[in-house]
Amino acid sequence: MLKSIWFIFKTEILIHIHRSKTWLYPLCFFFIVMILFPFAFTPDPLFLKKWIPGCIWIAALFSNLLSIDSFLLNDLEDSHLEQLLLSQLPLPFVLLIKLFVQWIISILPIIMMTPVIGLWFHLSFSTIKILGLSLLVGTPCLTLISSLGVVLTLGLRQQGMLLCLLILPLIVPILIFGTSITQQASVNLSTSGPLLFLAGLSLFAATCLPFAMAATLRMSCDD
Amino acid sequence: MNTKTSLHANHLSCIRQNKPLFSNLSFELNAGEALLIKGPNGSGKSSLLRILAGLATPTHGEHLWCGEKIEDQRLHYFNHLHYISHNNGLKLELSIIENLQLAAHLALVQIPDLQTMLSQLQLLADQQTSVKYLSAGQKRRVALAKLFLIPKPLWILDEPLTSLDETAQHFFITQLQQHLKQNGICIMSAHQTDCFHAIPFHQLMLPC
Image (cartoon, rainbow over all chains, first blue to last red; front, side, top):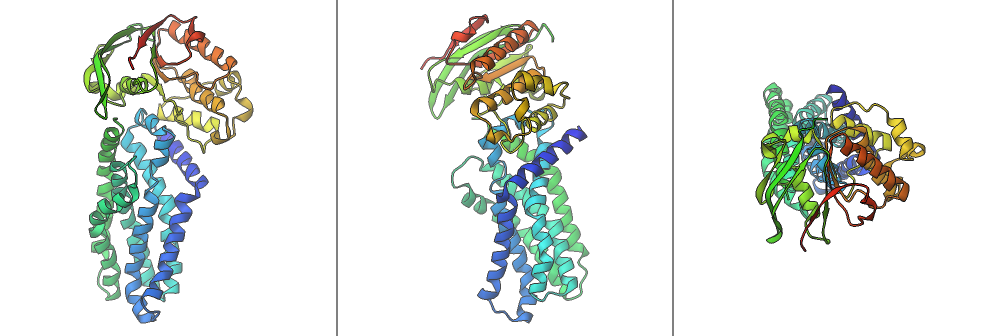
């Protein structure tokens, strides 16, 4: 079974690398949105230092929504999804692998780019570190929650817009905790509390949501 | 394979978008028997096959595998069947070999002899090619290769012969005969039925 999980992981990575849409678009989107913020506000370093971490979170959140849109859509089109439903490997496992790959391909590059963005906007090294860490533990939860929305709306037209309406209210807590971490770090408060809370949320989502998604998927394919 | 395998359908009916497709459909298939589902376009052949594969639930009625309700033993039932829909269910970005390996890994089995099967299906030369560059008939052959490589008692096939050439059709029919001889069961839909005279099909005609 471990061998099969590893094989599916490998093939998923391979498929996504062939499809630049899932990794290049979100990354470019993230960059462009980040460049827009100083135009909209003011290029004052003091101001940017204070507000850019929050902006990075919002940009990461939107690029996550942009990329998660295509999750499972391709499998639905080539009806590989049916083969996944019939698979002997438990469906929640398969979904978890696919989500993990989705996160690695579309979110991890963004997290790795935060130091570059941080240097542009005069963030201190410690802020960058904390920001990267908060994204690292918070974004898996984002991906998981938004993928539940994807499964619910799978096969509908204009899915993207509905997806945003469904998901954005649900991920407000993650945004609050994520941004509060950098704010607390800037006034030298301990950040381990919110960091652990975010990590806990992500773990909780990773254990429960795949089962909910699998059940929803079976129902939404039942027509 | 077990000689006691059987599939019963009791009074199946299906309504899609307020339109009744078929109703009160009952049949029984035992080991070594095959069923051919015929009917005009839109008569519900694919819906019936999806229901029989356990992917969709019938509006009324039930179906039993080896005497037990399928809803109660879905995962166990999935272990016994191959379902191939009309769009093959292949990943277009992967090569032929990778697609077949993926199918084997999803079924949690090992493929014994891939090369022989690929040469029999005349796919050996293209085994590393991405499936998206293959012709429709070649894609179909890759999808069908799964049936012959991973032995399972029940085959549910949605128009398996579409876009296959004569050699491939002939190869499929000999494999199907062998499958039935080994107490397998096959349910398939088809339009052109003249090439099946060698196989004693039960026939089911869906009304328009």
